[in-house]
Length: 451
Ligand code: 1PR
Image 1 (cartoon, protein in one colour):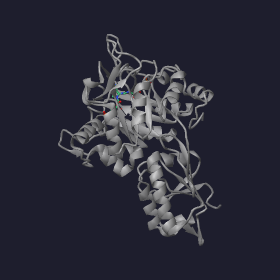
Image 2 (cartoon, rainbow, N blue to C red):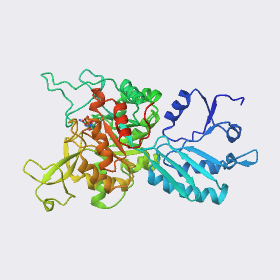
Image 3 (tube, rainbow, N blue to C red):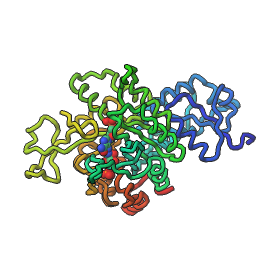
Image 4 (cartoon, protein in one colour):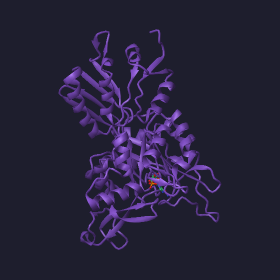
């Protein structure tokens, strides 16, 4: 075609189009933005990105109705959509609603292939007249805990049970590398996603933290897997009395290249309130951000700590029988949620929190475990089973990976959709390629093998 290497992009204001733009450019194409319906008709290659709020994407299509006809023919044989991060449940709901709307007014597709590049666990959906065929694959995620060290540099750090300071006289913040460099390395090594957690975001206003936005901007130019960013996402009033909503904070992260945001402490408060009042106010950061950007763009990060009890009747919260008995031989435990980077325990368990945040709009749960964090002794299988059996959104198992066998263990013994690790990758003990090679050998199907 005369337009050679041009891709026409319909950017209707979805949040995470930056990563798509970067990917298109990386593949050597030029981007032309749609400005008039004519541009759509003349496009040789048209991409209309989907976000979780897929209905609004369809509305754009509906409003510019002629875009689905070209030279008098309906483009109905195959519609390929790149959907950024759609959760499985939402996908199914959206599919049926799209089918109804599409069939009712526009065209009856023989096959629609939803090729989803950016969903938590990569799935290929074939949307056939008889239903949806789904292939589900697990992910390996590299996590970068980021904070400013005592010299003022933004560094990747890593704690032992959340303590990130070296056990030296200086007691300095452990420095394991630079965020942009490491994320690029992990992408090349085959990470299916990269998470940045601004671990001091709870005390500093994150938009004051420009380096973090810069990190996202730079990382998203070279990392073409979903980028999640968390830490400090909540409403905030600065010292001048200026108010920023959590939605504004999240929007700034999305504009800078994040595909998903992750909420920790604020989700705990929202869940506590919801369980107390049984009312969804729609005002929590979790509800607001998921309403605008879709559930698939909102991860809730849980930081629980194991609390052993003699009997399940000792607490009103959900207890389970644990594989590893407590210091006094206790065989029961509950998992207490914490806020502010594990500093404060709250009167709510991980089980109660997970169920509540799912109802409030979380599309995914990042399940840490303070007891296992940085210990290299394996994931907390009891906890991961408790949560992944309780919710229908994807659960990312996190904390404790120390060897490749821990990854196969978590995928064979639990329903986790992804396994996240930090220390073993940063310390170069186990490269991501080895994890993937091992999973392949064990017959566990993954999103990608290598790049
Ligand atoms: O509460 O919304 O500001 O979010 C704060 C975020 O920062 C939360 O996601 C919380 O998990 C994280 N965070 C806060 N303090 C720490 C800390 O370590 N002092 N990091 C922290 C949590 C857990 C994982 C870690 C895995 C795997 N780190 O991110 O990477 O445990 O580690 P491993 O493979 O080395 O065992 P808010």
